[in-house]
Length: 219
Image (cartoon, rainbow, N blue to C red; front, side, top):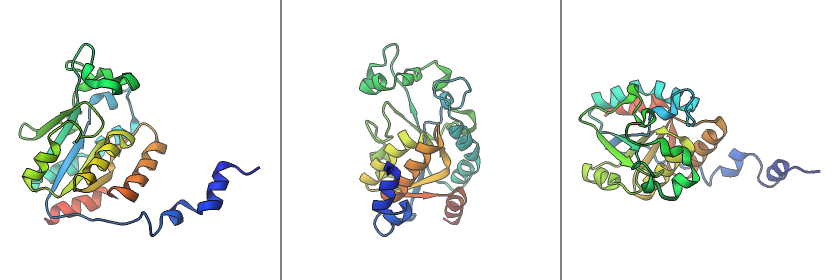
């Protein structure tokens, strides 16, 4: 009996071959970048938390040189967090009904605090959101346009959730989306890799940390 995966292979060949020449374009960096640090909160990095994800722990560990370089080169750094109104999180709408684990993101809960290694400086903007995309319900797009930004370097978590949603909205708002592979994470490698593949195919460029550092240092 032919399995679904065998049937897909028979129809489309290998994954890379199937996408080659159709969904493999590159956009490259523009002239004016901003670094976006999405939702690096302690709920994702604290062992025992329902949101804990080793992939996010690894991504946070890779962030210091990128943050240092962005700050040293004068690249704007914008952070996002998720924060709901206690006690009912009504501003989370249907999302907190679908994913009640997100109800922990309220003021005073340690899980809603930024990871110390990547905490915003006092002079760095923090955009608070209630949904996946950093653009949805926030002034991020207007802020980037006012700053003359054309390239959005995305880091943070999680790859299959807020990173993907932000990447899709980023390109739809007219920005060059660059997702730093080493600096995004998820709770399992399968959705992490699948979403990086999809982002790289359709919505932006997935790039390495070294390439990103090299671009920033040459500006």
